[in-house]
Length: 249
Ligand SMILES: [Zn+2]
Image (cartoon, rainbow, N blue to C red; front, side, top):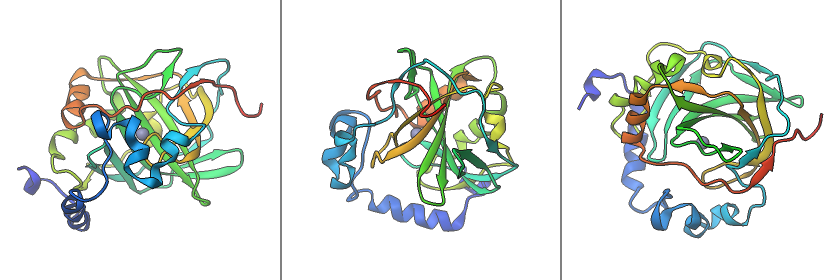
């Protein structure tokens, strides 16, 4: 146990232990077998959209046009990292990080990872995918997807991946060392595909604005392996093909 050497969040620890003790009775979803994506809608009536929805995500993007600009205003932020059993997530604690889409402001609440990627482009997937989840005042979501592919460096994501070995207790929140600006996690080019879809985990809620960056960022083999050691596989299959055209010019 290395918990004593780590700064964990006491309140979240208590909540985490409570959540863990409830896991035996709570409905759980997974990625393989009888709790896998094909069965999500049968596990909980609130998750019906996972099978009855008509604009489900992720998708195979058939690129026809990309958007060149991303209207983001991100700043230095702090966060808490944890393994919730489905992914490794960083909850943004302090910092104003706004995405504006068609005049609507969405605030970044958390980012998390999938391995391998959930979205595909022209049938091609990547080693991993990061989702930056934003929420509007009305409660609607906009998610920026960033593909991660193996390379010679984990770049600006290195400090995040460096936290992985020491978050071994599920649902316990740990402070991320230092601060980070989420803008640094994005590829240099802001070009992206855009389409209307859903959350890729139950409840599979639809009406999610998806912005999938066209350029990947790199991540080290060992970081991909570290993530896989904690979360063996957490990619929902693509649900449809989408010509990634803008909803309006
Ligand atoms: Zn996700």
